[in-house]
Length: 189
Image (cartoon, rainbow, N blue to C red; front, side):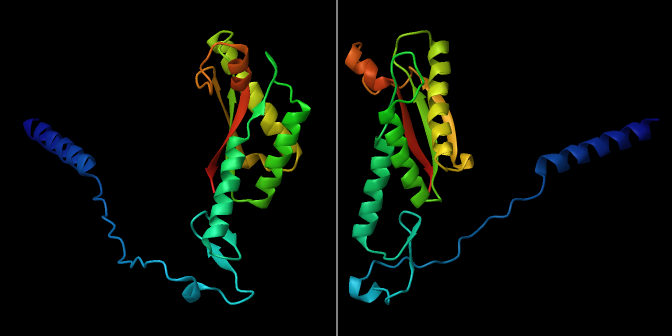
């Protein structure tokens, strides 16, 4: 009996030791890559008709020049900066909101690798729960309109921040109007 207990305890101890150590993790050593300094434009100019990859922004282009990269970054900033605004206690899209969303859809169609998070926001009036729900409805309204305009729903996600992230913290009508919005953030691409 004593031998059985000793064997059983030994087996349990060995089993626990094996589970704790597990398989050893392989350490990945990065391959020796040489980072080269940018060359003058004469050395990197592509031959006519030869496509090149724009690695900085992750968008394929026809030229690897800085002005194109700057133009793309400006377009991305404009995309994220153009919010859709809502009336008080509403998630209905106005004509102006639909126009902004049409411009965003055109940008997304031109850049199919981009994914976007649509953030719903509210002003400070109302309960926190109500504002979170209203913010979600605002984000969904913008998302559904983009899908209506031909954007794949897989590229769009929604989140509601309710009254938690005001763009203008003042407690007046002008600030509240700025805070009733759907904001767009590029999450991939």
